[in-house]
Length: 553
Ligand code: ISL
Ligand code: CA
Image (cartoon, rainbow, N blue to C red; front, side, top):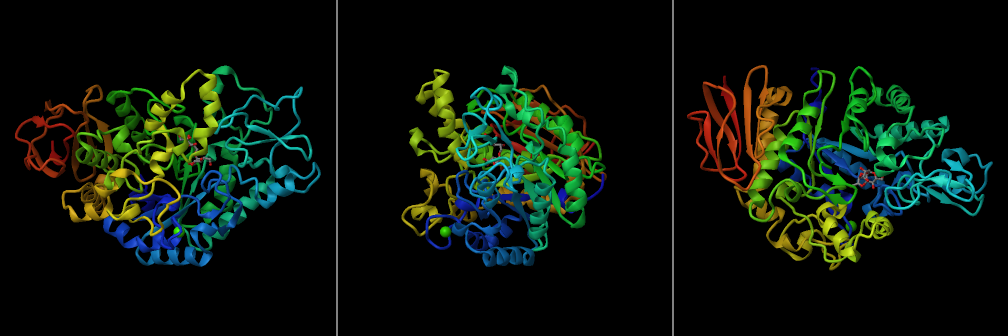
């Protein structure tokens, strides 16, 4: 297992729009992040990943880029970005940016040119097709509702967009597109950024036959879209022409990708990407906007699948991001055991094998928002999916019920800094989006002032990881995969073995640790009554107990 700095780091994802508003216009900005770097340093994270900060009409909150070399006006200026990068580096914090190169905004100069005529020099920067007997070229669907094809009046042809019609897909078959992308990557790398998170990188290659999807494929188009024939070719070229020239890391957001493809792409001998986000865990039980039941053994199996890879692979571990609901609501119990279950999830995330990615607000146990009607949502995916919901004879009430468990907007409500108006996010009376009504109780100020808070539990765990490379690189083994309420695993390092016991349930239990050991010493627990050593193999676990021990077998 080769040791790399990006395997040892803890990454914190910031959604700049909702993080902190420094200039009082109700919208988060880069200056706001700068002002909160001390807070992030107190938490102990090593790397920041910013969701897109580029110029954008914000149809999809920045995932629709209009100019890759310009900072979004609402977020500030290029000087603000340069100062943020410089200050991060002074504080030994690395800065990774979000590269959205599967598509651009329809307001990008390349597209405003491309759409004008069939022989415009930018025509082949995008994917244009004639209609088929008056219908879109294929039956492909967009993730934001409707067809993945949009007809334009200038040339009567359709262009492809896997996401909104304001996010036309780039044509990676065109070498000019690839060279433009590599040039813009060099532009940011030359500034000294420390890597890229690559948005839906799994989709950049398209099967040039443009065949209709079968009805089964239409249920989860992402699995087909992620099977483009030239993905590895493009990633190897990108690695050779750009990534290999800097001491950086790359993480591919590989929506729809299979585990096999993940192993192929993130194999360090393949020289493509360093890390890949797999979505199996964070979307467990998900069927589009529906959140179905799932069991702990099913979840444990997914952790084993991603953690027991060979020495050429390194997993990512995350239970939150800007596209998914808050983990304490999905995996924990935010009603009766919010603090305790959030700490359990912190221990799970930070003691697994792989690079942990935290998302703003999870460190203080922020929860889903109590939406009361569909008009309150900002996410275009909510409105975009409504026609399909109604066509499937689902009522708006049921749709709302599911969205209250699955919507992306739960993670886009503004960060809760203190109990003042707007939770201290902004001095403006109105913010761009909602704030959770529980901000008076759940906020950074209260968290820092409470030594037993979720925040300090994260801070201690991050410090434990930092002091122990042995834990970071240790092998992973689930010791009780079939147990329905306890998650018990070991991490076997070169010097030390670690035992993690998580009671992922509302029920107390007397748990028999399925592994003999002679000595144990408690490293951290979310239950102050936990004894420092395990007397026998049997341990009384209270609801949501989370413990990590050093043991000697
Ligand atoms: O829809 C989702 C959440 O349930 C995810 O499937 C998400 O759309 C998918 O993972 C792709 O996400 C990325 O690309 C989108 C953008 O809307 C997301 O915010 C981004 O993370 C298009 O750029
Ligand atoms: Ca602002």
